[in-house]
Length: 307
Image 1 (cartoon, rainbow, N blue to C red):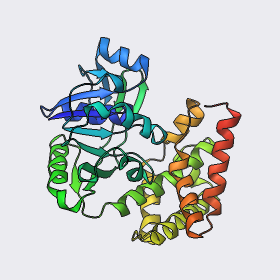
Image 2: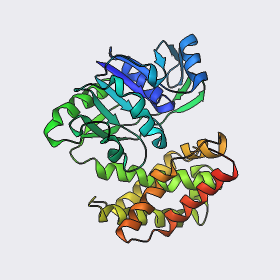
Image 3: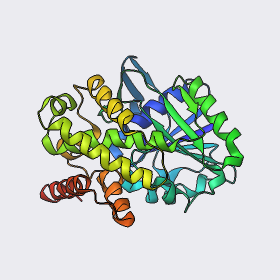
Image 4: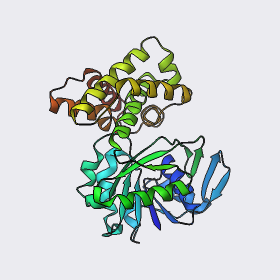
């Protein structure tokens, strides 16, 4: 199987590295010049639970020519339309596309480029870090859930799940993946944006007096909007899941902190808290916490002159 990783940051490198160990052909796609050059010249350096340097092909999305069997999307949410446009030359009639992006509503974008028959949506709790160009730090264990968007094509989804499990990525085929996607969005919506704005770790957020109160309010907004869209969500279970996750990741600066504070890059806020606020407005549901958080993150991007 020829697998492209469309967006080869930390998570893309993890998936590409692990899939390459199963005998499948893997090609990394990215637009970061230094990252591409480092991997082409020196290989992909892996540290953490494994110490290894592996040779993997990497190129810009527009340079890919071989038709893909599977494309795994790991690009930033706001870069998704451009990525799909750039890789249209490698998408054949049988190419499967698995979306593992953080946030909500990506299937609406993907449908503009890929027939629903070939779209797989998923969510993962794996983590990874990028120490620099060509250097991924992989530590800890995770899992993922995925589903074929077309109920008539579940077999394709199960085959991809089996391949990912063989790569020790522990994939489960899920006949209703949306609640899991929304639950992960709750994790990001409570930790990513707030830790970026407060410049703190997850543990520091939850150790503060007002942090847990704010987290519960944000979760409530996600739940009422999700349920209004027809997604079955258990608010009590999600609160427990988020708080349990905060303990496991207490010393971690989440990805939005890395983007906004550490690297002065645009964030995915419009696809997390911003998505809930937008959906809520269309449904007539007020989401003041998500609205304010989205405004604050955008204000910080503007102050930092991030474009």
